[in-house]
Length: 261
Image 1 (tube, rainbow, N blue to C red):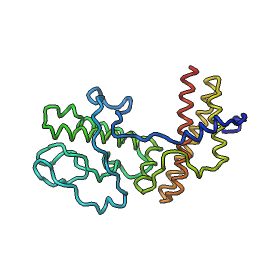
Image 2: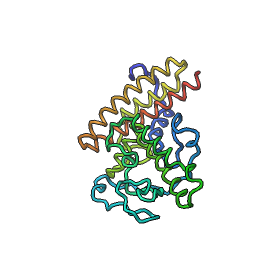
Image 3: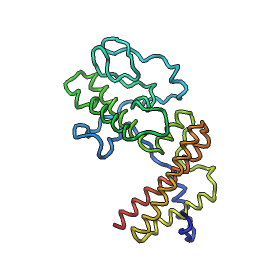
Image 4: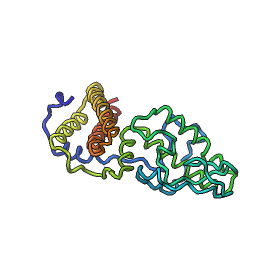
């Protein structure tokens, strides 16, 4: 991939690569993705309180979710979106993982079509527009639940954000900013790749780099899946750091194509 990137190295490109590792994480106030929810779901809910992330190992021993705030009925399922007795919307379960929120397996390999289907189903049911005539409590809880669903969907949809979240659950977050342990030769290669994107003069040149980057991201996805499946979290962390760099390059290719079109 990098054989066609023989260009003079510059400090400008090196700084660009060093800075590109700080990728933004999804937040609970994010809007649903383009092409997702229908018109009734496009109004962004007010961001609810932050959802506490707990290590995965505590899920099995966590106490049962409390009963309904309105009638006191115990929740048979977790997380509970509605009371099984009075049908009142419930506040978010702060001890549930985002995988549990969307009812999917705790796995790096997900069926994204099923993920989207489940997300849209819940969002249509819990969207604040459905509770405009309800009590103040139900309006507030529906806003918090809707914001949590947005966050869960955006986090689990893409391999990078999904993998980063899985490491967070294991108590191994990747800090924002430059990774000081990155191999200098690897950073130099990325510097050349970054410069190649900036200096691409035609859509064909930019697309060639973009296709090579997609191949690299696919390889990293398979390697990360293997490492997480074996419980090799340190190896997965190192691979996810590489993925952050290449995902940033992929975004730069898109930006360059917009300029060249």
